[in-house]
Length: 207
Figure 1 (cartoon, helix red, strand yellow):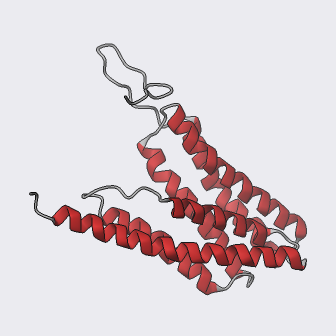
Figure 2: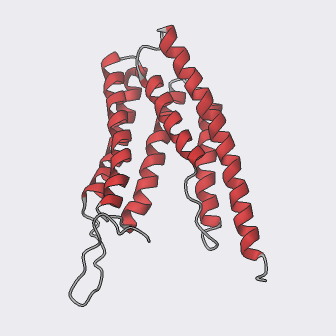
Figure 3: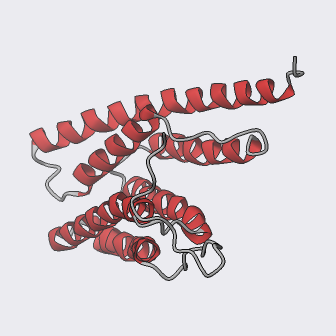
């Protein structure tokens, strides 16, 4: 038997289920994440990224945004506050934040452009694949995809810190970014395979 949701959606008189309002805490956190993106970029690239206090503030803004990403989905699911706005805005906010971090770091010359381009192609490519197969089924995030997200967030956070002259910090950031790149490529190829299998299964005649 399937357990009921923690907080079932409220019902109006007559048994009709009320759709949750878009004005809720999870969506507010998503909007906050979107608002933090331009502030984060401005703090990071100001004065060529050489002001330590600005780098620390940029890192703080990035971490706060990442934390909101961790909690807004949990809150929405726990309290049945999943909305169409949240379904669209949440992944956009995620990609805007990490994409801005990759692009800004490459702009500052602190991260090779090929890494940024590879990550952007993978992220938007997977999004395109999901739309390509949406009529045939949904491709949920895989464990590898979740690992990729965690590795990217940690690596970017380390790169954002102003103390890259410290060898231990620098090489830790490089190592984790390398792992993130490997997982990014592997999961991208996995999503391509899943999309092709989903399309093939949908076209297969019924027995």
